[in-house]
Length: 255
DNA sequence: ATGGCCTTGGTACAAGGA
Figure 1 (tube, rainbow, N blue to C red):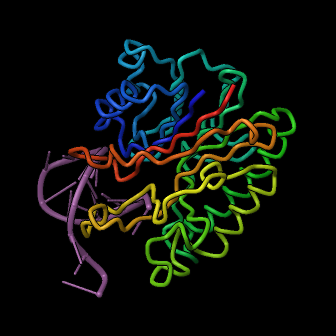
Figure 2 (cartoon, protein in one colour):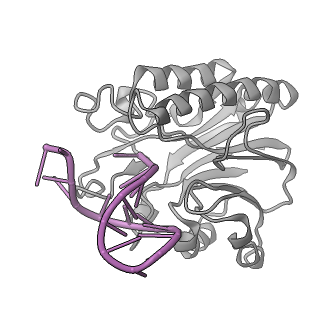
């Protein structure tokens, strides 16, 4: 079983690339972030035509998440229960015997800003909810755009970017607190090439220079860890014309 | 360099992203 996550930075723009990628990369579940579509504009018919069931939670202009699956997702959850939020950032469902949580974590903009405070509140609420969710669903995967580079090795220039957004101690402590719930960063269960990133700025020829961050993650619960066979970042779609600034992350679970 | 790009909304340029 293969699962993947991809921040597509507008599904309206990227749908053809998503369908092409899915044809070449037969995953069972794909979590999407930054669909940037209200629910009535989600392209469920096109996806259905390609053999994908979907659940989606979107809004106009910003944010928006979805899960695409080969089988019907059940037990749908949109956003974090009990956390009043006007931003569409979470969609969860049961697929193939797994609890799948797809999430678009807040960016946070700048330490000390209102948006950063929101990011911290959102992370607190996510963690509290996941604690109960994990207790009820031991086979759980949390994947998406975390907007957190967990360690210095996840940053192309950790000196220049020390303490900046995605790299602050507070964000990294939040990431470790998620791991402490009993989750593992699937990517780090394996030896990986140095300078592995999942996002490259559109500016500065950043992709060509491989100047990026690893901020898109797949976390697996303890019960699933023995089944994780591989985890990789697929840089290929970042080479497309009009690419997303993020690349997909893929995990393989042995069944 | 308080920059460089991309998307949306809307039709000029601001906001947001990371």
